[in-house]
Amino acid sequence: MRFVDEATITVASGKGGNGCASLRREANRPKMGPDGGDGGKGGDVIFRASSRLLTLYDFRLKRVYKARSGEQGMGRDKYGRAAEPLYVDLPVGTLVYEVSEDENGKVTEQLIADLTEDGKDVVICEGGSGGRGNIHFKSSINRAPRYAEPGKPGQEKRIRLELKILADVGLLGLPNAGKSTFISTVSAARPKIAAYPFTTLVPNLGVVEGENFKRMVIADIPGLVEGASQGIGLGHTFLKHVERTRFLVHILSCEDLNMDDPMDGYSILDQELAEYSPVLAERTQILVINKIDLLDAEQLAALRERVAESGRQVYLMSALTGEGVQLLLDEMWYRLREMNRAEAADGEADADLDAAPEAESDSQGEIAE
Image 1 (cartoon, rainbow, N blue to C red):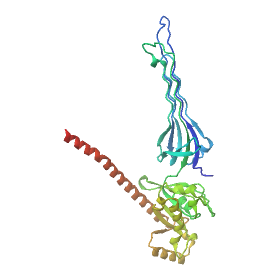
Image 2: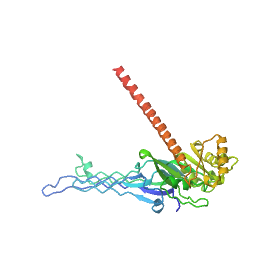
Image 3: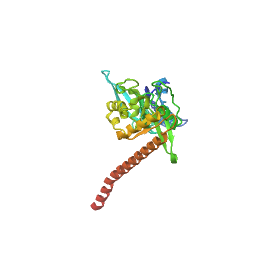
Image 4: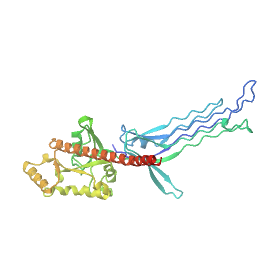
């Protein structure tokens, strides 16, 4: 299965219903005047984030989304019914760009929405307003107007959708580092596992359940290789997903290890992150060496010694046998809790700053009185 994380579609809101030009006539009452009602509003097109969706595959199959038009007004002061909005559900983490082309053929894009929360919605195209019926145009000099307004047209836009996975943790590593095995060990996710490069072609999401109903979402980012920032291997296709994770777990396999300098192996992908985005290069990383079950006792002791000499915190584990996995999970939970606390403290500080001018304004008002 190919992971579809981009799609271009056309969306159009509904046209407003026409107003009605009607003159009421009844027996023995020939001059009752205009009674044409207004047309109904056209339907809006609304994009809504949904955690039930994981890819943009459906938007490759259906590329046009059009809301219904509003109903026309009718006589006897009957207004046309407004059309229901058209809701288009998108995966959480979808970026919405409006694509436009100028008279010279130059194509530009503008980010108009970032659907980062389940249930979040945004109006992309507003429906046209309904035309006014002739009841609005009666005057002292025109008691029987025979015209009404047409409904306003809806909007039409060309939209490019781009999905970037949202997760607490991104698993980073060269192909066959054991990321898929790890995520299948700690969650219910069942990614494809095999002994050849790029077995993971779809960024898999796993959810780890903690105490007090806490959840940690882990994204298994497909294997990156040297030169990924220039598009080599799976390149930009998956590097962009790393941007939407809060911290990284950088996994190095014993098979790719330089036993004389175990830390050297991490520099390859660190360099790719730095070239792709300086912000990513500063993202918090937990360093892990996997597949220690492949080492004998003497090799494992030597590895522990080299790691200790480096002065860096590195977790040794075997995702296959489970050795060291719980220690790594405990550290991941700790990092997540600390980030949540820091973000909550920042939010409270921002709230205090927002409230400060109000308090100052109130006190000045009391002095003025």
